[in-house]
Image 1: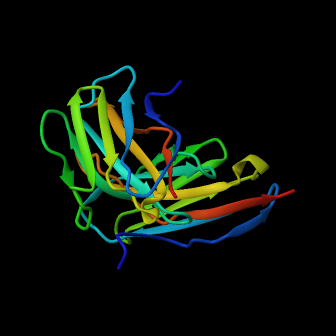
Image 2 (image 1 turned 120 degrees about the vertical axis):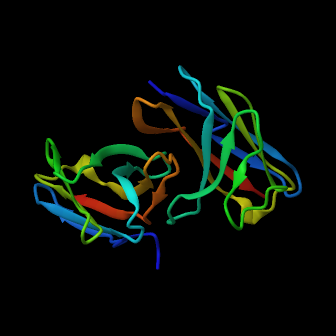
Amino acid sequence: GAVVSQHPSRVICKSGTSVKIECRSLDFQATTMFWYRQFPKKSLMLMATSNEGSKATYEQGVEKDKFLINHASLTLSTLTVTSAHPEDSSFYICSARRGASDETIYFGEGSWLTVV
Amino acid sequence: RKEVEQDPGPFNVPEGATVAFNCTYSNSASQSFFWYRQDCRKEPKLLMSVYSSGNEDGRFTAQLNRASQYISLLIRDSKLSDSATYLCVVSNFGNEKLTFGTGTRLTIIP
């Protein structure tokens, strides 16, 4: 079964509105989660590292005020795309590692965002 | 230069054939290497980790050449269900951040 779960799997929103995507670790605690974005026919690009109880670390070129990340608990990280524009339409996906003894990185199912 | 480079393909291969993918990485400090499989509009799923000694899992064989900073994946007796995009992935030791190649699209033809 899924180890990391994302919600919603698909969302359509109007330009200018905000949309929140949730990433949950289902049977483990994740102090760190990662958010990626993938445009059509392109590779996954890391957007930011979500740190439980502290500010997220953003990759170069990613606007932190536009992509708000909150990691308020050990099992939940949220990504909020604020004032969405059509060019924000993309596949957003999170990942986490179950623990020090498990090197496998688990991905959520991903969230397809379409901004109209 | 991209951190992880792959031939994007597409590779169109007849069922039963053997196909090989290659990948190069630029960061010599990279410690962990993986092949992920991504089906259309789905999340990536780990296919196999790659070790210096080489490793095999059924029809799949992965090789790592640290000196050349080169990773390979071999698929034998290809099946229709092998059709997917194969992602070469690299990370640094103790770093959970993954760097992805652009992926190689494989289509197995009946």
